[in-house]
Length: 82
Image 1 (cartoon, rainbow, N blue to C red):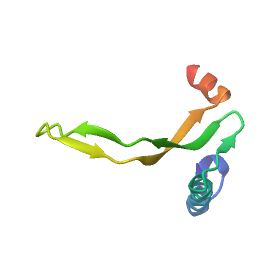
Image 2 (image 1 turned 60 degrees about the vertical axis):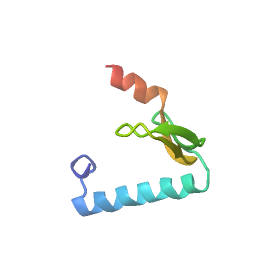
Image 3 (image 1 turned 90 degrees about the vertical axis):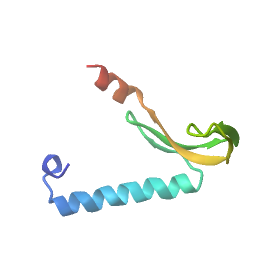
Image 4 (image 1 turned 90 degrees about the horizontal axis):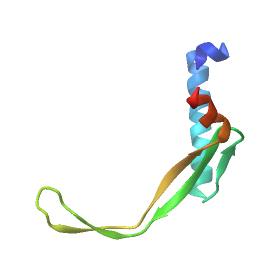
């Protein structure tokens, strides 16, 4: 990233940290973050469910949770196909 942007590694690291912090802040508020042609970050809620411990076979309760989701945009999908 630093080489392609012709900036120092420290500057690239700081820019990446700011980018991730910005996305995280908006996702915590329940907002979507979109980048035209690249994709959209959002939050999805998983319902509570019952699962099984694979080692013992015992039934366990899995609590509801929020998870980050990324949906690739059209341009990104097309670039990967090449």
